[in-house]
Image (cartoon, rainbow, N blue to C red; front, side, top):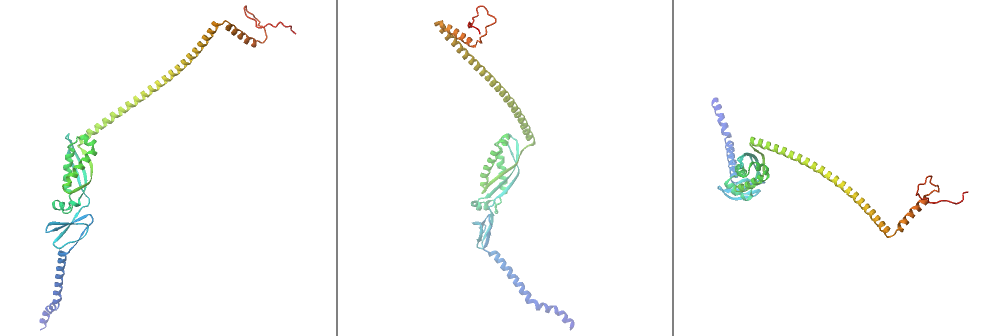
Length: 311
């Protein structure tokens, strides 16, 4: 009988532990059922900052929830939709100018979804607010359309206007998708290598021409300055000569007028001449030192003769 007892021992042990094992499986099943029910019936949802909650009921949009807590019945679903600023990189967008010069550019377009267009964009284009593929396509088409309006030289010299035209055209195009353009960064704006070499050669020649013109203008300015200095010196000399001539003329006129007056006076009276002679003799007499001249010429007057007695 001992071998039979040994064989029955494991079976008895299983029967002893069976109620506990059955109870554990039942609790686990209940727990899983509760979790599933909570997941299916959970009414609380969170809408993060910079997002909107799109509420759908059996696939149909029935509302838009703002940021924060949203409480929904179990037959409705909430999807978070970003309205934050997003960016789309467009590398080596290709276009052609009106004079058939190929041109490339790389751009970064920053955009966001308008809050009033969330439902429309969710329904037609994106369930999370990512429109980068649409933005890339629209930007390339816009770049081609704008560059075709300009010649290659104008595209270079009027780059600010080209950028403005692209911005305006892209705003209109992306508005159809519910996106708002924040800004556009253009970089790596380039033409073909052969055209860029031609532009560099032209710029070099233009710089040389401008340098020669500036040098010529400098020489002309220096010559004009020398002429101006010479003319000023000549004018100064002429003014000096004119002044001296005028002074001499004035003196001559004064002397002539004095002689004329004297002649008139002499013509009117001979006594004036005699008076003048007497005045001259008086001056001579005042200057005489009393010594007689050693030589007397015929006809020379003797001013005074002292005939008094000598001591």
